Amino acid sequence: MLFLFSLTLWVDTTGVEGETLQTAIDYLATVPGIDTVILRDGTYHLAINPDVNGIPQGLFLKDSLVLMSENGAEKCTLSAYQSDTPATHVIVCDNGATSIWIKGFTIKDACDYLFRKGFSRGSGIFADASSPWIEDCIIENNDSYGIYAMNTPSGKEITLVNTIIQNNVGAIYARNASLFLKHTKITNNWREYTEVMVLDSSFITVFGGEISDCKTWGGMIIDFSKTSGVFKQTVFYSNRNATPAGRLISAYGSDLAFNHCIFAGNITGFHSDSSKITAESLFVIDNGGVATAASNWDTVEISYSDLLFNTYQADTEFYNNSLIPFNLENNYWFYTDSSSIQSLIYGPADFIPFADDFISGLPSGPSYCSSFGNYYSDYTTPCDSVGQGDTLYLLFSGDDSDLHMREVVPVLIRSSCYPGGVVVTLLETDTSSGIYKGTAVPVERVDQGNIRMDDIFQRIGVNTSDTMFIKPLFFSSPEIAVVYNAPRMGVRREEICTVVCGDVLRLPFAIKNRNAVIYDVAGRERRVDVGERTLNLTGLPSGIYFLKYGEKSLKIVKVR
Image (cartoon, helix red, strand yellow):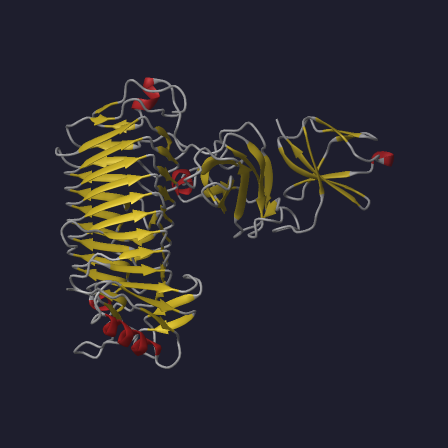
């Protein structure tokens, strides 16, 4: 007769916590059944288990183990750092282990010694021939990939649930691996010359969550090679390469499917080489491009999606260098005539029939606007004037169309330098908050030669003194005006009464002897007809002006 026992051990940071924790895990490996180790609050330094070269390898987890914190990731940290020799990994899942559960930790500080020599094997969690379940964790600040996965056992998968992978030198590396990500956020990871996410001969399913604000210098954000992938209800937002030649997604010999996803504010889109990419119910806006095919073995199909535009300026958004037509039927293009849509596509493509309005049921953002404005970096204090080097902090409040995804709001910014404007996208702060935030940077330009690159990189060209008119793109109002290089202002903090008017303004106070003075944003006095209670602004162009009358000041926004 076989008796199975399960034990629960509590561990705290008393003494040499790394060795204490490893000793507890090694002991439980000798006890039949699935055992549990609960870690009390604190930081556990895991520069332990040195290899033959004396480099610590991190904490080794055995099979049939639950490793969890008492009070969650914010209060319990597993760190690879200790003295001057951090570990290569924070956690190493034992070869062949298929029943490991890791829950509620911040996992950080792994040091990739091999990467510094031109290779890469360090990670927050290393899983070779194992399939851990990782839940409610924050994997951050590792000197290599947050997750490094290899050789997942047949029929098993590495699972990440409600986990954040952020601020690592790379997010995920997978080779001959199978992964399932649910409501997992991959954000602010970066990689130099190589890819932020690598999936080689692997399978990945992503449900919910997002991939956002990741950056690479010379590589791709996600590189798929001979890999199958399924993405559903996933947000791809503001992922950047050093140049437009970089790619958000590169697929070689792969089969990728996307459903009900958002692509917004990324520098580029899909690049397919000998691959199949199918997508349905996408909301695509404000990227540097959508799709490129490089060979005659590519299949690209996108349907029932809002393919609104990428840069706000007309340009080519689909490049098909193969002989196989892209299937782009039944999409809404922002344009409703076939010649305008055809101008967006290079190479063979079928795009008829197309919709003449937004596709229903997509994660298309808010249906109404309750408030919109520009603020200081706290997103609380209103700001109506910026100077050189300052940033616009834009906030939109309304509702959202999908309570399970962080959606986006496109915002149009115009100036006298870029009268046609550029578009930036604001990202919802949470899946159902209805509050959207984003930034743009004014840069001084002498002409419109840089407008497309500025649009891609969330910049607005301005003259030395200028007024920016900013409005949510799909709403008729409100439109706000922000001054660039206003006299004696830079970024203004003092409050001033603001009025919006057309050619004639009725003043909120009386002017005696008509001795008021009107200035434009460059500080130049402008001549207008001044009455006791009115100003006639017929001769002035739209913009922002300032009235000075004794101790009184009035900011005037003239609109068309």
